[in-house]
Image (tube, rainbow, N blue to C red; front, side, top):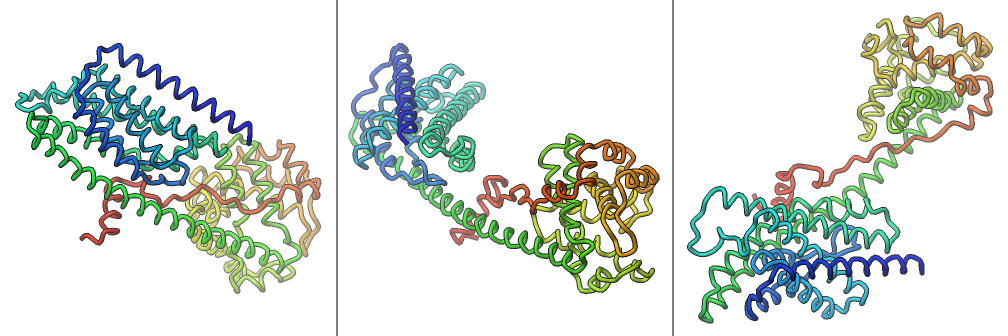
Length: 489
């Protein structure tokens, strides 16, 4: 804990030093004092927005709409005075909410650094102070407007990049959470909306310039700027509510899928309990399939998917019609064999209930009895049209069947298993996979050493996360959800 505190203190000092350096650079740009009233009114608005900040998703940091006023101050008065307004308004808000000194210092520093950096980028890209096309009576030209608007959005992107990275770094250090996870949870989902909301900084600037007259009424009329800011805050509140609902949905979905996964594992155990000769068969096939897939150098995600498919390849045999067939001693009749052949599709139907097993896992389960020559079942596909996972499971399934005792014969040696694989190479099995399998030291040990094979068995992997959050959906989906949450048509 002490070491973590030292790290965060060092981090805050570093950010504060960077902010001071940025302000020094901005001061060299011959910053002209805009006047007491302009600075005061923007400072007050930013302060009020800051003290009404809300927690971002994840609960480790805060978010407010004060950035709109900060950006407006920056493009109106320049990097130095925009940074000064940002620093003072943020500092006052930290005092009012009684923020700890270290956190207060960090919040002031990171916001100031973000704002100054953004405005300097704006100027570097050709943006004028204040934006020429926003001034009363300005004559618009397409080139000038496009240049300044693009410069502004580039500055906004810089602002949010600095802000999100700096805050995520502080949260990651103080909580011990991975930086990427903190950034994705707290900031990635709302980044697009922040960039869009920054447009209001242009509106604020335009209203300020329009009502920046000599009489008191004009100056007071500037307070009309609260209207779009209140509207924006309402949208953000709805967005937070919507995201919280999606988070709750994700949690319920996780529990549901955990229950389904546990039920699938129970099915596998129930099937194998019916026949002592095949006890542990699915787990052995899964271990063999994983070994073959790993020897092929496949990526970890695909190896896990193939292992899951192998573990679930016979789960359809839980259906009642297979019970007498699994417990029967001796070979099946032709009619019984036709019934047994339906287990591949029934297994796929059960696996399809699990959203995370769509794709490779589902396809491998359905087609794990397809042959290289196209004479397999259920669909008679052949060659490379058969998913790689299904081809691997076909070989692993055959190896386990031959290398374990059956009512009608004893287990075969590894040499005889190899001979059978080579015999049906390019007929039943993928020739390349056969070559890789017979030369695999791991597979040879698994077949020869049953204790070693048993130690390799595993449970069903959870699979890749299926997200239901609108952060990964289209912007239109978000607005549809927002309209639904407000009851609008």
